Length: 228
Picture 1 (cartoon, helix red, strand yellow):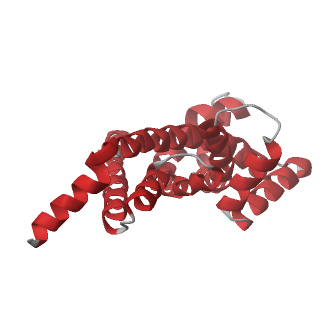
Picture 2 (cartoon, rainbow, N blue to C red; picture 1 turned 135 degrees about the horizontal axis):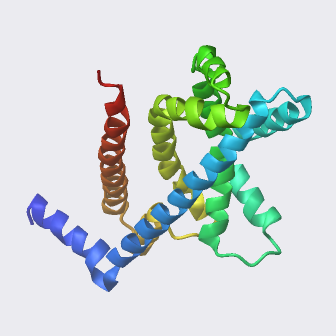
């Protein structure tokens, strides 16, 4: 039997027999669903935490500081298991939604620093110009500072989204069948590690590659207004 025949037979045994490829297809949907909800939640949380960190009120600074320190100082897998087995232990929610909330909370700690840095990167003169035009603090922030800050922080937010997709590979700890868990299941069922792991790696690579292409296009559109 030639090498390619062995590979072909292994492929059929791992993915075609008993329709095991459907596990991977289902896992892709779970991974994308968890990641999308998590990144949206992370941006919302991150924005409010960034506002707390930039606030002149000491109480808000303390809240933002504690949140950021705890999230960035503890492993994401520990946070996931704590939220799943402790916080939501008595609440009936879908596993994928609990995982999305956990990763959203985790992402919020990192997004907060990205947004804070982006806002601080805008020259103070922009704020002063907005106030001199009669805009209040909120209007100056939403109409002048944030539009410029978004362009600066967009690449970092894209990177956070990509990292988040790869981090969701740990949802198997709470029994959620994502891409990685589906690959592990196939590996256990067939006693073959090579093909399931290669398939898992290829799927993650393709997803992230396509995401990179889409995000770079969006970034290009955002930067068009800067072309003189």
